[in-house]
Image (cartoon, rainbow over all chains, first blue to last red):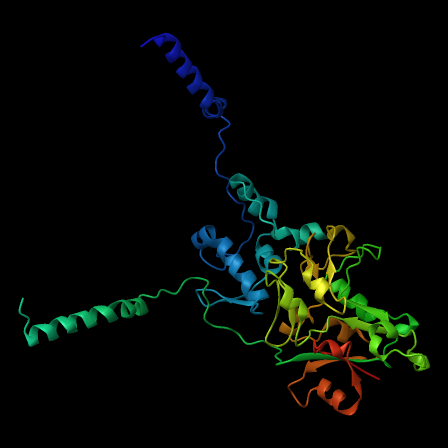
Length: 127
Length: 259
């Protein structure tokens, strides 16, 4: 191979530059960990199980939106038979009024910006 | 290859079992998804065809009463931008000659001339706004309410062009800073969506009458089911001469005016 020294050095410099963000974060110890949503309610369970809510809350809210607006049904029958009023502000936020610590920090972490709050009210902020 | 009659019947039987196997297995393996609720609670306040009757004589809009407008706009978080260009309104007043252009003539009854008439979305039986909406953001419910799905509205304003009553308003700006006191019982809107009266469908669900009907101190507004012959609206229509706004357009408005 001609100019082996130069080529290998080049490849090493290239790899260093490309992986810079990874080892920089690792070296500085500022590696971010997945945020833990802060739960302030004393209720034991959400409308469905915690795992179901973690995995599917966006789908549940989407179907809630459809049933209220399109079908005019404002009552949700959970899988354990309990009935809940379908309302983001009224039901969800009554247990989770701390939107910044509960919703936002995970959404920020995964880079999602749902626009629920452009219209739906946050009681703490709207007063 | 020779196939016996018996062999053929056996093979046909096995094939038939195979054909019905999948639907049967599917039927028994249907797991109830969390969230897929099968129980559909009935409306607490049901009607087959909602309609409103407005008594022009009972309305004190002439004397500056705006109780119904205030009641509606405060519970629905309707913003007040303070200028007519950006105005958002669900219920408002228009002089008689303009709200009923077909009825206007030179020798109009004195007390009707220039009299403010309460107008709102007519929740037409044949709503042109629903026909033109490209995303089905506006649609008609079975009970006649012409609804807006703000989630789906893309702000094209076709519905505003189609509505012959000017019942729809567009949010040119973020409405939140222009709402005096946000009522948490109803969402606000956002920039870029069209909004209008919803016949208080959220109140009907709770068994309440529309806010404007409740707010009128002269009982000038009546609300009820047109398909119920004993309803208040039917009784009023039976005993009074009634007019509707621009009936010649064929939209079949469901807000009736009596005097």
